[in-house]
Length: 274
Length: 305
Image (spheres, each protein chain N blue to C red):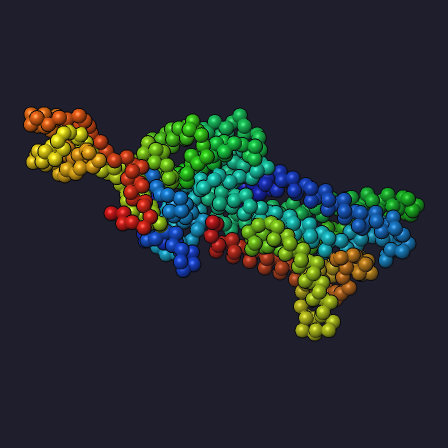
């Protein structure tokens, strides 16, 4: 299995799209979390100017993961599988030794590994930016605890992983990339948002909103310091609740990853590669 | 343990339907023997590629049985011993030829030393570091063959390997396939090009509308040789030849006589006609070309027999 994963890492590592997404994600992540709100009016930010300081690093960055980060991870997931249909490379892979499920497992594992630098790059860039802002504001430099940072990085990875797994599923389902990304963004932007909005008046929808990706992602983020006011003012990905407790959020996100992977495996195993 | 002559590929009543109306492969019984180069012939859309995809486990049969190297199609133990190139070779366009093979070697569980060996075998070493998207069609075909050879397989399944190649590339590919066959490998070669198949295969199967309409050696399919005679007067010549004891059939076609007889009887027939005062202007041995046989067999909607 190690050689299968190594092979898939080569496929991801040498793909320009991976590096382009990593670059844009890091750049825009810092812009939306720090540069733009700080440039507009730092005192008017939901968390005050302190949200831009190193101590708030975990919460400030995590607030961008459930929606903004999710879209990037979704694209990464779609590319990992959907492109194989476009290039017709699935037939080449499936006529090697390992079998379809092993190929999928290797792809998922490689994707999971590639998400780590995505999270680390943003946290590293965020640390530098918050340090610079603290210097500009002449504020004392105080870093979050290592334990909080580890948990925040793990939570960020989990949030990205669930969206990447959804991307993989959509790539397999639609056997391509364009429609898969379209459906994924539609789901992220419209479906969860609209159903959440209707949940106040349609009671049957209320339990459903508790298992939405954004509800559980944002719940995890707030548990690790993200400000709910900040999330509510988060542009198209804004979220005003309901929030769930951390164990539930962890369980739901992990269950979604397992479900998306299982559905992808089922489709990949059963369908013809024509 | 299997021995020479046993079946490496065996299908029984193999059928693939798409919906209720499309039958891509119909009740196909195919047997490819160990060590032979088997030509799988058929016009475009006859069901060749669907059959190959079923053999490789890419497409699930609707019904029937398949065994490839004694394993079900798509099973890892079988795939480990099969090299395949189905339709156009497909690679990651942004990866070099070498990196594409490294990815496949990783999945196939073969050592990376094989990558350079097969690149050398298909003479792609010089361009191995270039992205595969920059390769010509011929180079992609060669990379496809290299990928198929990575596992040093017992069985090679090649689908239209000369598609898109120029005449020199086609000749090179034919030599390559012939050499593979002589190396003791079993090769299943799908094609619609008669020249290609005629020159490299031991046996051929012809598929039409998903049905295997003929199978045998090229010689079998071309039929027994006969003689063609142009003589004057033709009816008298026909009468005399028909009277010979070992002549099976004499037919008149376009002012010529088609004589079904052993070609070694040509001098006897010539002498008979000349001594009878018949002017013989042509007398030669002839066989149906494989292309002629193929066209006859694959005329859609007609009885192949």
